[in-house]
Length: 262
Length: 152
Image: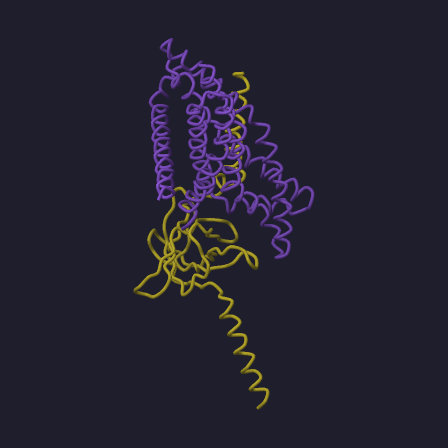
């Protein structure tokens, strides 16, 4: 009897905690949107975050894109060569990058590179009572700390994803055309013939915007909600990576099924 | 710092532009101002919307719509052709394939009529897509009848 009651109590606690966290996250997200006007008026705040979120992520995004392109070129060539259609390498590389790998891998790298930084920074601000100090000085931390980071993330992610795809296409070009010797004209012309601007590229951009909102919001909520201890901040940082990676993959499935099934 | 953010944003937009122009078909052929012509086919094979319409190998338009005409029991393919290109009324339209496994497109071959086709009219001479199964069937049939006549 006691065991059943314990199980039920555990379940109840689990549900209420998670519903509470969901409500907290939603409220924080709405407050972020509410205070974004203020952060746009003081655009320097967003600019500073753009530097630490966008510019400092450039290297990892570009190098990863290049190597993903290399691998796509090699693997794609090996498979396509069996069917004598290595000319289609350009299509394979471009479509898989623009539709899927660009937005998704960028979002995963972004969660690891920038999401963790956001969570740790805000968590430490909370642990060292900087957020409370701001409130004491009647500075709204939502407008000063949270909203600029959110918008910097939303602005930089589509650009990073586009850079990732571009570097990937170059990587595929280097391996496929320069090293293996696929016909250059066929590579580019077949690519251009089958990659559609609205269907493929714009949908990829929409995906990366959605991922940016999800990952940045999760990082901000985890940071803001973290326990103000060393352990709490480290837990929150871990949770940011785990949650946002899962959410990105889940959202990717939903978006793909909405966008690319005719 | 501002400089770096500026560089980041510029490079990002440049990448987007590269994707649009060089990877995608933004710079490619799009029919802005065109007229529509119908073409009825017994079988369109794998023809898709947005497939190119070519004449003498040059793209002159795109397939706007492929639908089934329930009165004629034929496929009604709506072609959107650039207004710059006018075709005679007796132009023939055929569904062709670029390469052995390539995409299908519509080839137009101009006739000798002095009347030009107008918006909303239909090409009367059409040739359907080649269906491989039918072709093999015909080949086997003709082979079999050849053998029969050889026996006699």
